[in-house]
Image 1 (cartoon, protein in one colour):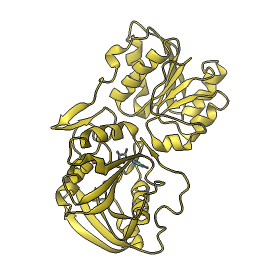
Image 2 (cartoon, rainbow, N blue to C red):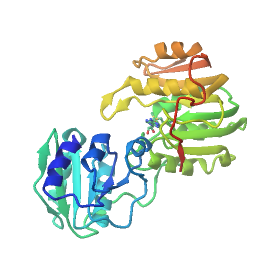
Image 3 (cartoon, protein in one colour):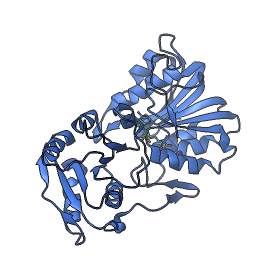
Length: 342
Ligand SMILES: C[S@@+](CC[C@H](N)C(=O)[O-])C[C@H]1O[C@@H](n2cnc3c(N)ncnc32)[C@H](O)[C@@H]1O
């Protein structure tokens, strides 16, 4: 765990007051930095929500030191380390689990002649290393200056969900959606593929894109800009499980996430189903796609009067559900934290 290594780094005087933290810190990481008044830069609305201080997805101009919490995507990890060196050439710290590739990143860093890389702190199945070098010492690792077009009119950036192409499950759902009307949402909208497909339906008056990853949401904004009447789309940098809609929704589409880090976690998808039941109006309808093995049916029948198998293929199932049961909390009543728009 990062926190264990941070305690050692802190005792060694490697963490100055006011350091910048790039990545997705958990609560223990934030606690290990208590009193240092760190500046958190995170693309995750969930991470931002659990931090003790306000966090933003935007980088500062400079920082006394920058701690990079290694993401799983190697391209994104390299991009963040390059950005960290620009922010704090004297002191960059890179921390990560072995399962997220910290050892190969450290090997690659040691191979850079322009950098000075210290001994790694090894603990709790991960490593933390400190390095310094010229501001532009890792310019070859920098993220592309603009998003990459992966299909006609569709752009993504490294590290977002399905960055290399349209997700086959989302494509299947898009191909089977009936005509929709009124106000609805894509929960976990990613870089907006499903939403771009929905926007061709002129009967949709308003579409809320709710997404944890600010970088994906920025791509969605670009991807929807050329769709008909793009002002119908509203972007929410928010955690679906706590997001509140302005009014009960007529429809929800979703391809819910089912991984926490590397581990499969069907509770995430179930939490999305709970949110859908809470957010839909009495005659609203949910359309979802999921891997065949994911056990969502019990929760769906607990929360909706009608659950319909819409078919699918060998890998994915399509399900629609309507008439949320009255016992399901409506419109986010049990929620406290407001969503942020970005
Ligand atoms: C399987 S993808 C869905 C992709 C998408 N709708 C499409 O058009 O292909 C799930 C998305 O949910 C997002 N996500 C995961 N947990 C979330 C949460 N608690 N709140 C909001 N978004 C979340 C992920 O970042 C990811 O973009």
